[in-house]
Length: 257
Ligand SMILES: NC(=O)c1ccc[n+]([C@@H]2O[C@H](COP(=O)([O-])OP(=O)(O)OC[C@H]3O[C@@H](n4cnc5c(N)ncnc54)[C@H](OP(=O)(O)O)[C@@H]3O)[C@@H](O)[C@H]2O)c1
Image (cartoon, rainbow, N blue to C red; front, side):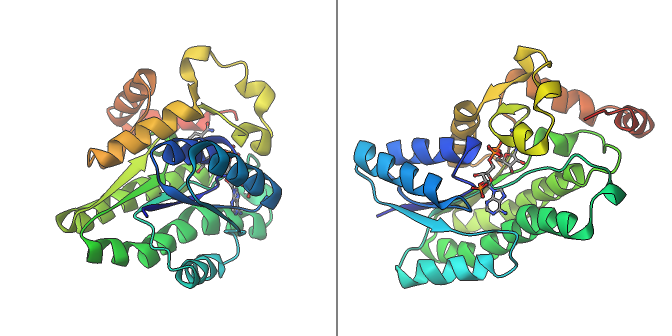
């Protein structure tokens, strides 16, 4: 049985990955905090696709979560051949407007847990001589920093870490992709608290979670280290890369989230 582990599978892009990978015949391990949602999704996918789905409840902001997840996988003798590090969120307030515990959670969920899960699960893939890892970064990784926001820096880290890991593991048959979506319909902006403002953005800037999941899956299967889903997003990433740093700074300063 080929297993895929998806973090943040209770909504949005992670849920779309779960549906896609179940269709592809993977047995799934789905992870998030909202147990009821995971259970419902597991039941639905097992019924529809006939694959086995294990729902594991975890708060990835807990520094012990990656070790505990690995222990639960070992207990079930599950060695994922596909890892999707997708769980994430962003906070909107300025750096000093939020308390440290909020920033610490953001860093733990989107940097430390992502890195630790790769470190814990990739050795078995390397041993097998095959495996796939998708780390969900963002188009924000190509964008200028915005006032007080950690998110841009965090997603830049995910982009660069994923490329570095791909360089190390590719010779062993393990491919790593940094998936960098632009604006995607999900619960992300509801959690961030800027849904109303975001809904005013033009439709051509938006992608569906299903399109993002499909692009990520196809990219990692093709051994591409970076995937930016959507033509408009690829154009924006290209323009941003070639924009002089001083201009990027000024543009970032004016960002109003
Ligand atoms: N939507 C966008 O416009 C966009 C653009 C670029 C990149 N992204 C990235 O895409 C990824 C998925 O986001 P999305 O758009 O699908 O947002 P979403 O609909 O809000 O889903 C986020 C998922 O992450 C999980 N999660 C959040 N905090 C968690 C924690 N502490 N422990 C475990 N799971 C946690 C949530 O599950 P629970 O709440 O049940 O724990 C949920 O399943 C994120 O990394 C995000 O940064 C999104």
